[in-house]
Image (cartoon, rainbow, N blue to C red; front, side, top):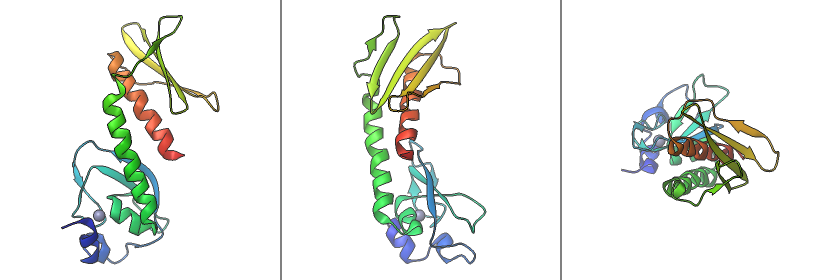
Length: 167
Ligand SMILES: [Zn+2]
């Protein structure tokens, strides 16, 4: 069965009293990189791209699949767009490390992409990265410890995905 059918059959929270069926808002979309959990609304659909849904009359954020998200927010197209965006980011992510990075005068690798400038550098055996928004000029510095250039490059990519998904 598909998520559409789970909704038609009122699976999970679609038939539970006290759970609003409309008026939800998506606050975040996440790529869990595997079918690691079930949609928390129909409680049936295994999901990889997780839409985090918020409602003023419900105490918890529900992590749901694309079709449930669309019904919950009353906009199937918006939900599908978010899902497609994450899928395209995922295929770009696979090519991210093999893209042509340039080297700055200081010897640091950098790349300009999607309105951001990513620069990475090594400091005291740790790798660090800066993602600068080229419109606002605002830099975002990596906070976690990274032990390889690839690791910090991927983290930078994920940060840009997050920024783009919020636009
Ligand atoms: Zn669902």
